[in-house]
Length: 451
Ligand code: SAH
Ligand code: SF4
Ligand code: F3S
Image (cartoon, rainbow, N blue to C red; front, side):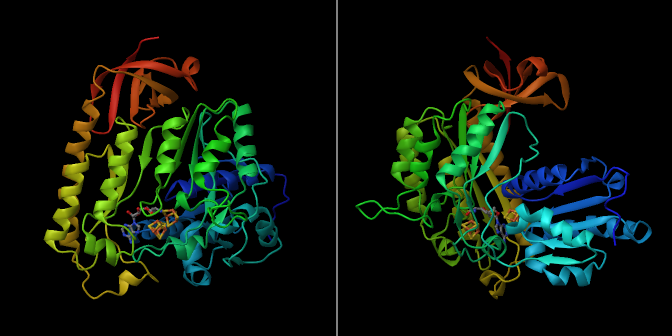
């Protein structure tokens, strides 16, 4: 049995891999641990509870976890009171097998169990090795998350994903869609507003699916609680000055949502809408449910309403069977649309996904060559896009010190461009300030405060 009750302070460390979803889960799990009396340790080697919140979106993300884990498993051989936890998407994917691979583990817990950490740890401290990966209804947030930032915060609106993109492991590891109620979301935002938070990012793997699983329809048969309705419902929360959201799915993106974003002043004019490929045949093989033309139409519509809106996306190169000509269609789309930012990735076959079974897997050489060519274009286009800010006055929400220059602070424009300028963080943190942009780079800006 572990001596959890000993007088010595219990210190915990969490390393988080993966997306915003995982980061939000880690903040909630940290909140639970602190309520249990644990204290944060920056150094994992000083902690007696280590939690890896893991990602399995691509193979390299998964392998990183094993190398981190290996080191701590070794440490446990001489420090038996160390508690080792694997949470998140690798935990869900591997389940029991993880215990066989790393027998030193105390707890393997899928993402749906994040809010149950205290119960699970009680079982661990009673001497059990625990695996919690069964599908459950996600508990409404009961704890106070330990948030990284004092200015910006994530708020989950929908968990899981019901899509079946053929390359993607997320539906397997995050389960079916579960929307939180509008009341619970608003309440969390109100608390954040009272605590001084200024910016909220509403989170969902497919945020346009919000509300489909909640009861109620309108007289025309539309769901009563769509994401657009949610934006209207939470828009006036006191203290919150900016609202962002991610991720949008082109298949479900509506003009009604575009209109709401234009009308509601707190909603940032920034859209993250992955397109994944510029080729219709590949899109079909990915089961994305839209064409390149439909995607372009959405972007045109957004720009019709909000000409200056920032647009970002995700894209995959080297999907099985992708020809050079099909890849060039992706380059073409990036060229045509001029994104502010594109997250790029080489296709990685994932266990339990249909695309992994396709016979025409491309070589790593072809994939990395395409990735490099795409990244080169993305950065040229991003530089061109960022140039439009030169000489403009932008409103920047100050978040932190510039970690590379103590005389500067960093914040974001409402289009989500990282911006640096001279200033004192203690005076400026959480403030919206006017900044004249004096220098632009592919992915960031520099300016001077003009207020
Ligand atoms: N829900 C979001 C994205 C989830 S995963 C959406 O629908 O777009 C984040 C990104 O990882 C995806 O947009 C995709 O570009 C990338 N990705 C997902 N599976 C991948 C795989 N098997 N190989 C490479 N990239 C992948
Ligand atoms: Fe994955 Fe597709 Fe769901 Fe996004 S929408 S999480 S890419 S299955
Ligand atoms: Fe990774 Fe899981 Fe997010 S696989 S990208 S951490 S949903």
